[in-house]
Structures are given as C-alpha cells and as structure tokens.
Image 1 (cartoon, one colour):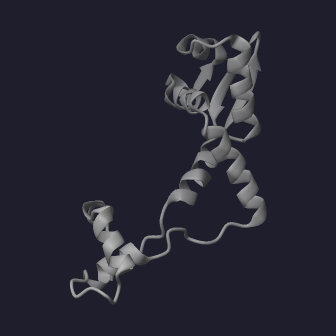
Image 2 (cartoon, one colour; image 1 turned 30 degrees about the vertical axis):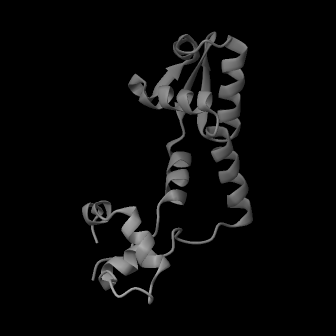
Length: 142
C-alpha cells in the first residue's frame, strides 16, 4: 500500500476494524485489515536505545526547546548562531543557553564555538532515529 492509500483511510475506520475484528459483519478488505491492525512499531526497543530516545523525547517535550529546534533546523545554511535565537523569545540569555544545553546533551543538536558566539546545527541522525521510532510498520502491498 502506498502512502496516499494509507492517508486516505481514516483513523476511525482502522480503529473499528481492529477493535471489532471477527465481530462485525462489515469488515474492511484484507489489505485494509493488515494495514490497520499491524504492529505500530517495527520492533521492541532495547534498554539502551530506550534510554537514549527517552532523553531526546523528554528534551523535545518542552515548548521552548521544541521551538529552538525548529528555529535551528529552518535557519539558512542549517545552522544558527545563538545570537539569532535569543531575539525570538522573551527569555534571558542564560535561560536560552540552558535549553540549548539540554538539547545538546540529549544529542539533538551540536554546537561549535566561533569567536564569542556558538553556532548550533541539528543532528539529523538523531532526528532520523526519533522519526523512525514513531513510524508504524507498513505492510507491503501484495
């Protein structure tokens, strides 16, 4: 099944098909049942991987940090100077620095000092891991 087909199916339909499998006389096609009722994750997380991902998700759970990440990721050239970030918030410089430190320690961004400023860029491999964790397993079309 392609992504257009998947996005065309409403969540409610999938929920009904999975919850009432075998009980309803109005079941969807086998392909729809497979897509809707397949495991949500590709595989269970290991202990170490769970810790790393939890730390990153926790860091992104703060609205200021999530906004900082989006500002860095969408900045021209893929990196942003801390001087470009502080003006977007009504927070003190030390508070912004704290939030950037949390993102850095979680492995979501990297920073490089250039003179008196620090330039931050998103670690795309970590964003890939976070995204991959949330993607459901897709059943290949037959």
